[in-house]
Image (cartoon, rainbow, N blue to C red; front, side, top):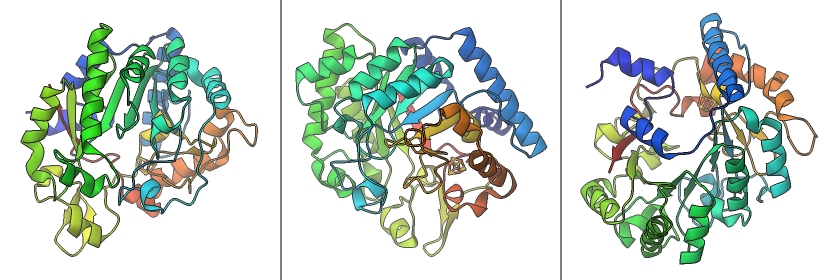
Length: 367
Ligand code: SF4
């Protein structure tokens, strides 16, 4: 068992959410070019991040080493707590185009280690998505995506995914049979997801590749909490590399009553049946404001993926013809960082997010 102090240190470095074993395994499988420019940039970011924490005022050196890029905010499913699926999202729906994606990579790709292709919406709905991946791979950037697994419908498509160079793919699958699966993944087809998993692992074997690394993401709810053992069996049968058992995010006491499981290791909240609060202290701090950024499909820049409706967007990359480098240090972004460093809970979404939790928001099992 890790000591609390060591856990805290890993957590501050952003490493505790991914256990050491998983991080080491990934490092040997995924492809990323560690150029001097990227390493130097990362060092500057880390230094400025800790200086900011210590001085309690934001200092920004360098550019974010990780960017989240939203291929689309359109989704085929209607998951009840996802604003894209349940209709709570008010920002326009659309898809990122290739020209704009390339302009982002051309602008800051030399500094970026990793692109996470997700946010709201199903990435594979954007027909250009695998071209985004290929372009990022040409620049030596690690690529990840997260899918509900409904769009890799042929062997040929599965081979295209493998050949794109995608490093990691996460399948959201919160059930081990059609009934429990569809309780949250409303409109989803469990059998199709299982078929897709098999199709992708076979394509990977046929092509003699180790990537994409395949992860099953299982949000632990009240209605599926007894299916953990069965999920591990399914994952093994389908040659999945890893499973992440994730805690659920809820927005109201009603949702907490309906969805939260009993087992405390799968809870990010304290819930006594009446009122709900995050577990542990919420520190005035957020490393994501130095290490990450989120580019929505329309070019608006959000501080993180918890900004589902882009309410806290800093600027608009494509409309205003601003470079990302300008936006990263603009007045709104700096003011946002300042507020998180002085009163994080004062920003509604920052009081209901996983950043800085003492316990990880996902338990990861390597297979
Ligand atoms: S919601 Fe959480 S991750 Fe996002 S900026 Fe606020 S504290 Fe950071």
